[in-house]
Image 1 (tube, rainbow, N blue to C red):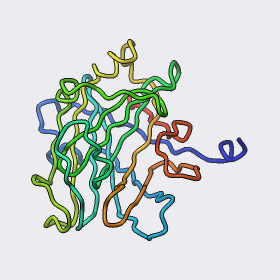
Image 2: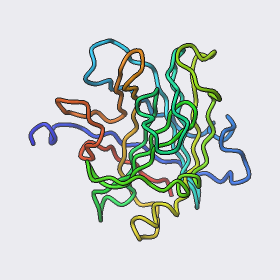
Image 3: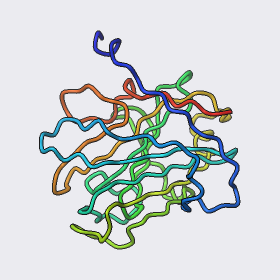
Image 4: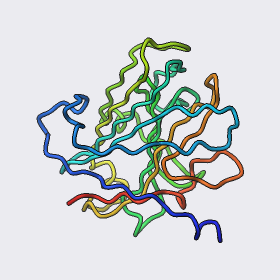
Amino acid sequence: MFVLLKMKKKRHIVTKIDKSQERFSRQSFWKDVPLLEIGNYLWMRNNYKPKVDAQICYSDNFLFLRFEAFEKEIRATYTEINSPVYKDSCVEFFFNPFPEISETYFNFEINPLGAMLVEFGKDRKRNALSVDEIKGIEVDASVTAPVEGLHGAESWRIYCKIPLAIFERYYRKEFLFDNAKGNFYKCGDETKFKHYGAWNEIISEKPNFHLPQFFGELIFEK
């Protein structure tokens, strides 16, 4: 308990945008959205710590995510929805939009091909969203074919557009853009160099991202 009290949790402003007619994977869409860095690499001692930038913003109806992972060599093998993409090179976003009423959260896990694993719940009690629900989430990925090794670029990128209606349906509450909690991660369980990175630091003896007590604060810009 002492450790939890001493840790300072990060805070990030979630920018509100009005670009409903602009494609969310264009560079211009993100030019005024601040970056956050997934820079706390945990548990492994192989010194593999790729630079990873993330961005988050929202409109009246959608939450938008952008990740850029600076890795020349990657593992991208899974192509199906709700496959174990965390075994590939993977970026993740864990999100609780209503921390005042629930400790449950969503975990969005995405590999370089844009294949997603999405679950809702808490700790080990999580259920995957249906294929139809996940198909309602738009993803644009910079890697277009399975690969293990060099992928021909200095980095790979993921863009994601999540309907706010998904959160409202599971929490049975209107999304009012109040303060939320969440964390951003980078991992690769079966990559050449296993690694686990986080935006807000986690304290745990074993690799475990499913610790919502270590989520940072996400402040929605009004």
